[in-house]
Length: 104
Image (cartoon, rainbow, N blue to C red; front, side, top):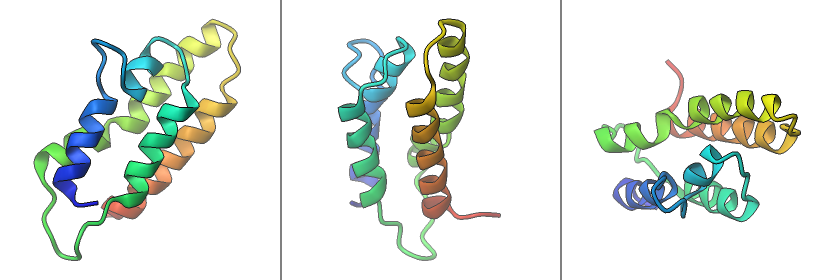
């Protein structure tokens, strides 16, 4: 998947108004495995050609993912919810973004 298509797909996952996206629903302390699978599929399919500069909007929609997900852990713990599924999702996102963006 090219970066511009990925931006469009990931923006939908950030939808918080109608909670149609994974992150919008996660903010309501609900982990939807099917929606996370969509995020995984998007992240798996992203191809950034070597040496290409990244689109600013692309960075905006991906860099905050792990931080946002970690913030949700606190609320889950306060509610006494098991965070295993969320923990595994955070690990996946961090690893995949490292592959896509690289390391300094």
